[in-house]
Amino acid sequence: MTSLDFHKLCLLAYCLVLFVQLLSPRSCSAFASATSSTKAEALLKWKATFQNHTRLQNLTSRAYLPTHAKAAPCFWTGISCNVVGSVSVINLTNFGIQGTLHEFSFLSFPNLQYLNLNYNNLFDVIPAKISSLFKLISLDLSNNWLSGSIPTSLGQLTNLSTLYLFRNNLFGTIPKEIGNLKSLVDLEFIPKEIGNLKSLVDLELSYNKLIGLIPTSLGQLINLSTLYLGSNNLSGTIPKEIGNLKSLRNLSLYKNQLSGSIPTSLGQLTNLSTLYLYSNNLSGTIPKEIGNLKLWTW
Image (cartoon, rainbow, N blue to C red; front, side, top):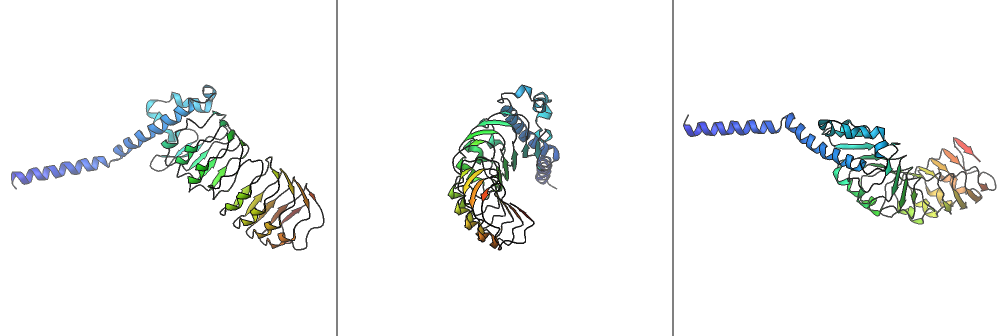
């Protein structure tokens, strides 16, 4: 072997060792640690903006973790990560948080799939930049004090299948940009545009302060399986168009101010198994077209 060949062989061996080192668990761990550190800093920065951050015992301990532990938010209460150590779940239900979402670094969590912040004291508006969480599957901001309108940017979350915004101080209509939702929001009335949400499977608007009529456009939601409008102040008659919802299994209209007779078109709902109409001002008899129900309550 010549001297040149020997040097080439040594160079090749060195490159191979370097490549193996780069792929070693220690190197991957170092990369994941650096990434986790960024996530940890983002969460701690958001926490520092809470009005009661010094009194939250279930969150305060984070600030006093050792340096190496701070880089691992995957082990924090309410935080879960995927197999590569990236935050995929933030579940801070009922943590007593008093603050806003303005300082939440949405861009720091590109792999977040579940964000659950319900039963807290979040206030102010929902930032439009929440659309940066493009992998989000479920968003629950219910039971807070959020105000303002629903940002149209939520329509950019094409993977979103569940959205809970009820029991806030939100107002306005449901943006037409939003589709494929399982649950909607606390509004003053049900807009006719709701009929554009063709992919809706589960529409739950019970226990709100809804007034006005039930829009006939609901009859366009042919994929709807559950329609809950109970415990509101809805008035007028039950639209006969609801009979077009062939996939409907559960219909709840109880505790409203509905009047008139029960439309015979409900008899077309062959998949219907549960029907709640009690505590209204309905008149007449139960149409003979309705049958095969598991539960009927007047």
